[in-house]
Image (cartoon, rainbow, N blue to C red; front, top):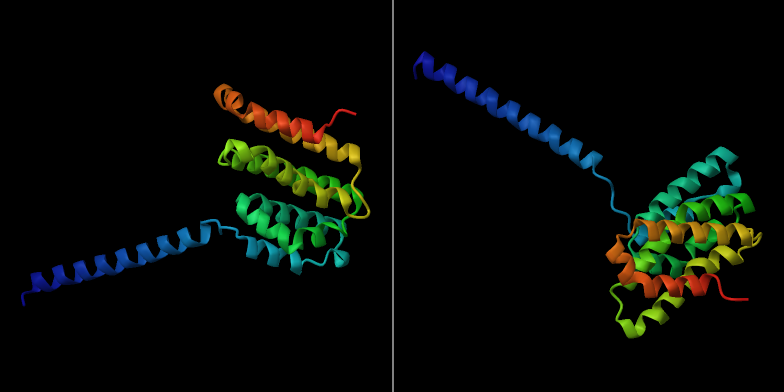
Length: 192
C-alpha cells in the first residue's frame, strides 16, 4: 500500500470516528432534552411519594407546581385513570386552603379544556351526560376535601378557566362548541 493510500485511509478512519462521536453526542442530547411523556401511572407514583407534611412552604409550592405540570400533561383518558386511583385526592387533601386555591388555579384551566375538547368526540346524544359527569368529577375532589377550598375562590377559578377556554376558540370553533359551553355554564352556575 502506498503512502498516499495510507494517509487517505487514516483521514477516512478519523472522519468516520469523528462522525460517530458527533452522532452519539447528538442522540444523547436529544434523549436528555426530549420531555418525558407523562402517564397516569407515573403521575400517580409521583403524587403518592410526596409527603407535604415534612416540607417547608416554598418546597410545598414547588411540589404543587410540579404536580400541576404533570397533571396538565395527561390526556383525558389518563385523567380518568388517575382519578380512579384517588392519588390526587390524597395529595390535595393535606394542602392548606390557600394552597388548595393556588393548586386549583394551576390545574382547572387545563382540565376544563381537556374535558371540553374530549366532548367533541362524544356522540351528540351522549354529550350532555358526558359533560355533566366529567365536570362533576373534575370539581368534586377539589371542593370536598377538608379543610375545604373557599367556594367563591373555586367559582372564580372555574369561571376564569371557562372564559379563557372560550377566548382560545376561533369564531367557528366557538359556534360549534356553543351547546357544550352553555351546558358547562348551566352546570357550574345553576339558577338559584
